[in-house]
Length: 150
Image (cartoon, rainbow, N blue to C red; front, side, top):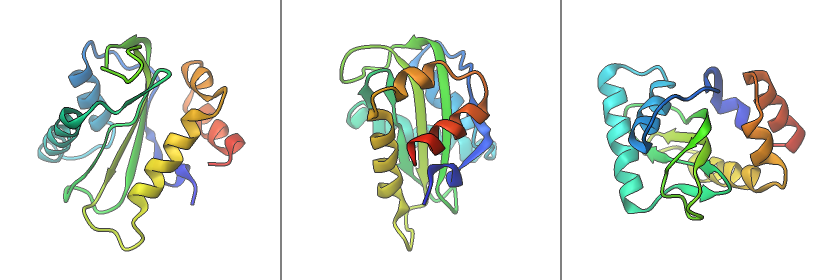
């Protein structure tokens, strides 16, 4: 199982323009191309999840995630905010790279936790956070994932 299997090229935005954490979450969810009602539901769920504790894991990375009936298979989205956004991250630093994970409530293979773990492992690799900040096109993200074996 590789992360690129869950990430469509049109679910990548390398120029997030949102000014707040809530706006970043909404922009990330919009990358999934859901119906307006579906988008609204997922945005509400990821905001609620953030209320339990920030998914800003440090080193400029956030991994918001939730489960919802709105989708029928696990989906990923990636966004980069060049200037960085205040995100209440664990280290108090701005977030530049956001991986959104949305999964259905029940999965036979329970990929949700596996994918969350793979993303967390990927972004902890020594040079990955800086490489994510330097991406200029979506193909580079896929190449970086391949290079890191995720």
